[in-house]
Image (tube, rainbow over all chains, first blue to last red):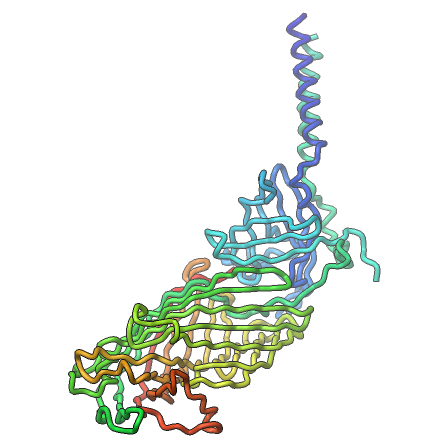
Length: 157
Length: 369
């Protein structure tokens, strides 16, 4: 009888613990939202999948390829198999993990303009501003872009 | 009772699994991308600024390791006069089989923000002259010092890009160089030579930027203040473009793809080199306060391509046209500013002539994100 009660209690504890951890928002979740890079040519929606953060292209100022007049694809990707993948919906930020120092790192950023993937670290300057630094190997060899958070409701004109 | 426990465990796993799935904040409903069309900044005070680059521009080089080679030509060293006009050394022509050397450059972004981009760099160029017949102590000192020491330039540079709004920007470029026919260990800071340019520009579209400004430059062979024109553009199909900072350089760009580019155009190179010669081996020039005013145009084709990821190879070949290689004398330690002969018309201490060979340059580059 005691063994059965213990099993029941353990099960309930697992359920409660899971519920507790999942309902408590991680500080890393501040990253979730829609962001605009400094050039204003695209908008990126950052989501959390599992314990990692990913960002995909949800808007392009120039959605169609001027050469074909069809929706832009990832035609500069060095991998021929990916050249026909639509840019809208493309996951250009991958695998970011929130760190105890308040940054998101261990991820990569992809530049569709040249088909290159860079190491990347994200710092939140304030709740509506991100420093996105793409770099090659070491952070000194890189460039920082500033992204601004967009309101998810339509803006007043 | 045991069954109830298993049910509880299953329920717990189920709740956990459901919540785990809910931590994927993306959803297929977001494939309706029209919901992102009319969004504004959360921060009402946020402003958009133009970026320093345009679409399709060739990538900036963070690190560059290059080798430059000029073919054979005749170097006609003129008579060298001292400050009072007396002859120090007679004119003499010599054959230079090759002029070659290492060219290394670094450019590191220091600040890269939406409203300010600041970059610092350093460069080192070594140019060695290989004479067909080695000059002797009796030779014209220009030949002997070039043969023995070659010419070197070591410098630092900075670029500041300040966007004013979405269309307008200011661009400042500055450099300080120590150049001479000897090593950096003999170059006191008083011989630093400064160049700078300030440009006001506009970026009307993502594929075009232009600007007008003023430069203090040695590219035309001696110190000058000249107007400069910036013009960068890329056509609608990203096939053709122009990269111009006139008069320093101008190139037409053909983009095969973003990792393969061909350029045709020219670049002006120029610097002022402190002239020195070992007093033990000929005429003592230590007290003559002389500098070589080098100015040349390089008409060329350049092919730049990605070897692997961010490592690019640049290969260029063309014709080197020397329009000045004269030796000038400082007056009380100060350079003569002639303004193309409009302000002053002082004679050079030595007027030299160089043949114009073919040249090539190859460099390995780490390019910027």
